[in-house]
Image 1 (cartoon, one colour):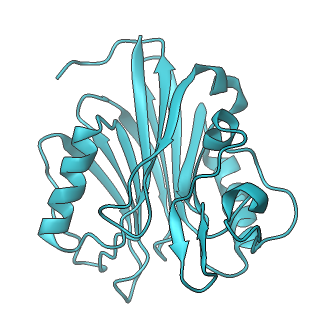
Image 2 (image 1 turned 90 degrees about the vertical axis):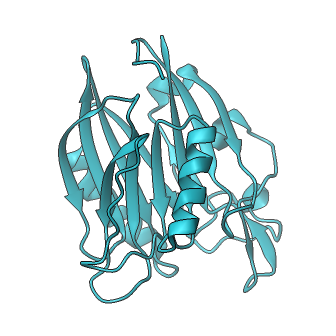
Length: 234
């Protein structure tokens, strides 16, 4: 048995070597296997060489003309995922990664939604994901919206309409009010960051928790899933 620990984290820029070092040290300390990072702020053709000894696999979606947006997925060396294919958005908004681990297949999807028309944009991305995905699909990212305004916004307001999918943290904390981000514009605390997993493996989820607001204006979210296999040790 092994534990897959996933982190979704809006890092608000890691162009600075010092900030990158802080983030990598943080992920390592938290024993993260797969990290989905949003707002990396890397520039096209200026993505730094990231060859950290622990997080030795990096994949990026970088916008074409500005140091905004950007998403990355990094994988710890002790989670020996064999990457089969990727789908990379050229605007720095989403990144799909498909890989095999023994007999298991995983699809990781990292998204950073725009702050307007989020629902329509997410629906389009999910259509692309449906065609790409295989095996266990894990979707994380900053959706820039609150799915359950009564619980996920201190103001009790939502910036989207219609129904929303179930997320892992809310399933494991059905009545808890905890937040990832303080919105100056809305003058409220909000939960905009999510990790979605298939309902079939919700029973295997051992823990979901929110980290501290230390390295960014967003707090990271963590999810641990028990896998029926053995991973390489430290």
